[in-house]
Amino acid sequence: MSRRFAYAISAAAVLAVLSGGGAQSAGNLASKPTELTLAADTGKLTFSQTKFDLETGKYYKLHVSSDGKDDIRLKAPELWQNSWIDYIQINDVELFNTATSFQIGFDEAGQANIFFVPLRPGNYQFYAEGFQTRGLTATFQVR
Image (cartoon, rainbow, N blue to C red; front, side, top):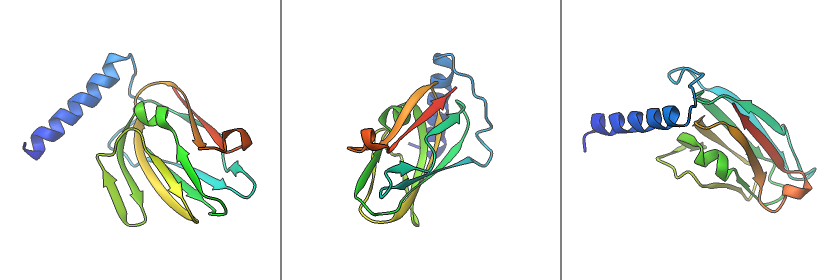
């Protein structure tokens, strides 16, 4: 399959999802991503921010980090299932064609960047598995 054909199919799929559910693209997909930061303090069991307001069709770069005081796995399955994931960057490694359900595990202090476009409105939970009731939960509200 040619690269041009693959790009055309990808673009058509994104447009079909955006138009099919009544969602309207509010952002410029060719622009630099809007940067978001979510830092996990596992010693205090807090996130640096607990609520994010996003727009469908807008390009975001989510910078996720952990202090490494405890092992955590960060998840947002519903957000990723309702978003187009451009790529994930960990240090100098970039992961493309990622699945819509993944976890980011921190065994020690570290960081990762997720580049994505939310496709469907809704309220989505981002949490550290096993720590949800102890404070490591954030909400992504997509309009």
